Image (cartoon, rainbow, N blue to C red; front, side, top):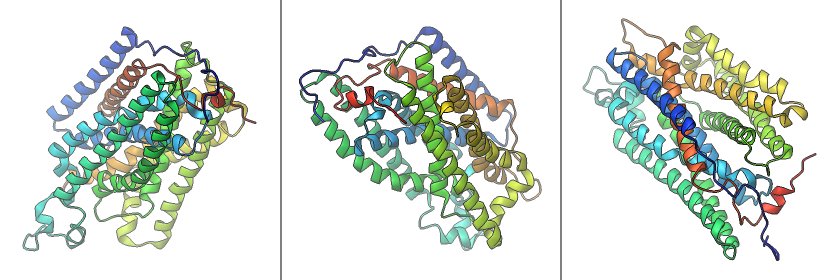
Length: 414
């Protein structure tokens, strides 16, 4: 794994140039999002907290899945992906932004999103008492929830920051590059174990607990599959965008092919989990379980089925062939399609339940996708774009002294 007698030369030794034009675009997008959020609060819009939670969770898991994949590359001693690690590092740094926003959402909007946070539902003397929620109160209670939530972001961002720092140290330390690499491998193994636990529990906490009576033992896996596909779609878009601007000459069709294979494979895996979760619950026909799907079939059928077909049929048809995964135009297009498709899926995961909370027994309200929803997403996307480009501009796009750079530069797929 060592360097041999000479340092491997790579051409992307300069950071990304975060141009003023790109900064302005990202800032304008953020402002559009802020205007939409202010308008929602000012008008007492029912969907406000659901929109905020959905979008923050969506971009959070993109960054989290990028951090996981980065750690996995070190643990498995993967060579081909070295040329895209700096993009994964930049994505991972968004976790601190997502953490701050999530704290604000729960602090100010927790009672609007989570029925179990209302004290009266666990008070046997209250007319609002709910025996099912009370039975889950050992796990679902505000104090334990806050401890878990803070713990998630301390762990996730702590490791993301460590991976970034060690990677940058590798740039300037030829003699110690192997030591930095093995340190990243050890910490990556620890992160994978912690990720395996916290990914599932955070999905239960932030999303599944919105509909407190309902639960699915597949929910953590389902969330993981969706986040992983979306993260690869975003990674592919970043890589192809940088290549279109003259960066990353080290990234070849072979590297794009491998990212495309992950996009395709995990689209199929997500489809399997989508169907398995639905089929197992639907044919059992247990009332407290099928309410989740009844709500979505009755009031969100177009989006619910539309997201399934977009996230399964389109990648299945387009990405099946070898050549499609090597054409920049095709894979950039598929990145956008999967990004939108899984945004729709996240909408279906969050909004229906949050709308039940927003309504009342006399007047049930249902979610919609209007300018406020789109503008809110534009704002979050602007923040994500700004953070990623900022961190790409702070270090060379290639890890100069990475012990496996030579393997990555000569990578070839069949």
